[in-house]
Length: 183
Image (cartoon, rainbow, N blue to C red; front, side, top):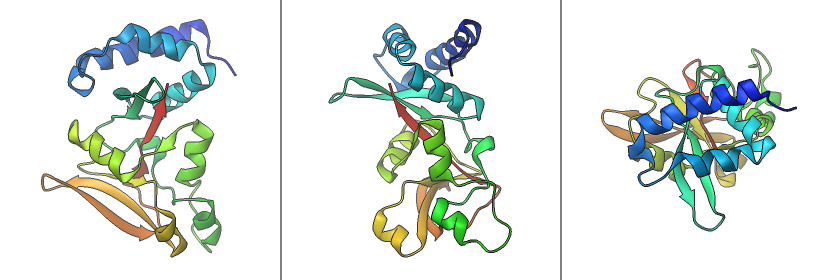
């Protein structure tokens, strides 16, 4: 699948405006090389479009010195609306006997071509602003926690970032997930 020229222009217009409005997230960066990298990789461009279309409001939050890639992250104030009410992963989804959610966050992120945020990445995002004041976001869960049936999520309450745990098969209308994409 490929995005039309018009759709790409519209997407880049939205992304550039957000980039310019939020320079504190990426001090010293310039938009032109970022757009050029995105235009050069159709697969990543599609993933970026999916982040935008599902309400993530992606923006650049860093640069990976090792790979030379720019890091986009969902910067919507709250966990993206179209990515809520899902349990953690396929195993959790299949373990539910009743009231199964529509999807799981790990598989949906994979389908979108993005990665779930780790605890460290979530804390970095929260250092750039205040996110998830009313919602929460599932995070990449360490294998030792997942083996025991749990999964972790984060939010910001009372001026602090909290990381919590829940059963991986749980899901809530106010819990979604944020993604990251390196371009």
